[in-house]
Image (cartoon, rainbow, N blue to C red; front, side, top):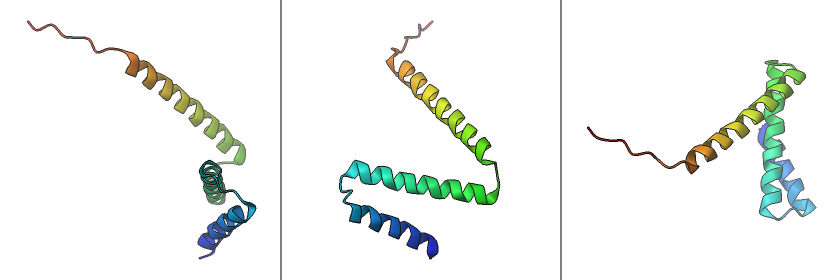
Length: 84
């Protein structure tokens, strides 16, 4: 109950502050959820804060590389195979 109350309170504060646009609202919701995820990970003591930040940066770099590779592969035309 307290977790859902926390999220509802955050959303109420956002609406009170006048964040009406969809982009602002969605980015704030994502930030709230990320912070709650980080809190859960820290409570579980899976990694230290520094290790967690390093891992996040590594994942972001890998995601960037994956998107670049996907763009590169989508631009290539398929080659035809000769039948024998």
